[in-house]
Length: 322
Image (tube, rainbow, N blue to C red):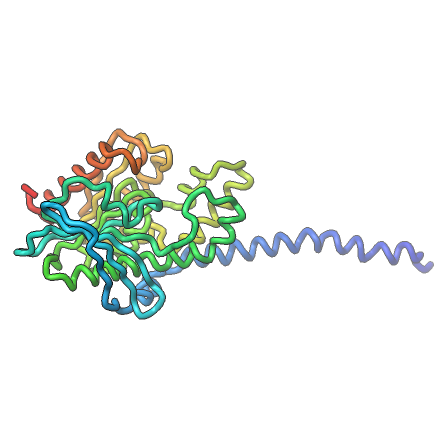
């Protein structure tokens, strides 16, 4: 008995159903596999390759007070890395000073120098992020459109720090053996990668830092779990080249200082502890009873500054009397 025409027409539809279900599964499984493979890469060589050679920097004197000069410095290499930095130097040029390379928050960038208190006896170089797009209040669509620029900025931040070190080493008022990086908030996520890629940096201070960017992102995404979990994973893939847990252990044998806040609403305690545990000796861990950094809170900045300067003095990276 031959099958009816209706039966013959129904067969392709029945086969199409499992294929329609299988294709999305295969697609998303492939995306996940590629993302996980990317996260496992060692990015140090590729980050160093972007460093290149520092071209002659352009420095403009902004102001001068009784003890310091303030300049805006444009740093760039022969490739595409270009970044703005703020330089604060003691007026007295009769000796070499320790230098701090500072990576601040996303909103402050190189303007972090405006919020720092008394820093006598130090050269400060506050580096901005090599990103010119909108920095806060992005809609989901704006974020998606900005992903290529964000990814490029992530890849270029570490080379930008290395260009900053090049610049400091070219100055006759900087002690080449006492160049320290201090990363605060967002900057604390990038600082471990910068130190791991640049042996010229003598020590690192991670202020309100964290490890495991996927977990950190999940805690800060205000959305249902069905959406927040894949979004956090996507953020982790995007930032994989600078995941702090991949680098903080490579700071050793150079000293690392990790300052965390017990009341920080943005950073889960387990992310802070994971960073502490992954770091190797010599390491100093300090907890303070405060929340996340507030750009306008001078008292908070003073507290962070005191903790940092005390550690620098204990490590003999600055003078005790500073």
